[in-house]
Image (tube, rainbow, N blue to C red):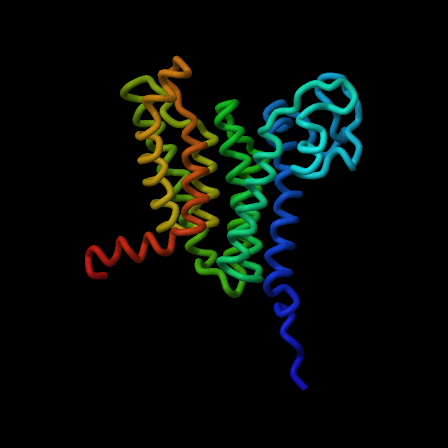
Length: 265
């Protein structure tokens, strides 16, 4: 008698609902990373506390989205306002996980994509606020991509993942060297180099190039507004890379097919 297909246990709607709920929880942890990693703090200890009054946040006040709504966006103890960024990140990550669950169904590759989009979301928001891409995410992200490429159903093989990671890192380093050598400008930070390597390891060289192209287009479109608002000549390119990477996870295959179709290949 053949064994039952384990994926049947996670078919609609159970898998989608589970993905949404887990995505909300992971988004809550993402908020911890966004707040603590740029400050060099542990994301594990101490437990979550109000930054204003230092009161420990109880589990029932730490439910993704729901607790913020129930508390009307304020700390229970001191009534200090809680940024709407927290439920926004939780909801966004939950919806990203739900979208991948609906699009791809239950598989290890779906899980890998969920982890990737969460990491890119966190990196994008950290870079937007701090102009920083923490090694605590990018370096494990490179290792994660290389490990995921060894999965049986992976669309890219380990050699391609390793070559794309190295190529992304070296290409970004070369851009930095050229601008630094001839213009005296640090056009790309080393965090961008490592993020490019992470994208190469996780997506392969074709989707990595597509991500960089989309990031440049998005950056050019919003760059003037951001530069004027910040009064600086620096842009958080990692934010554009992360956002473009999330887009490519969802529609990268379709965009590549469309592009090849333009040339009949």
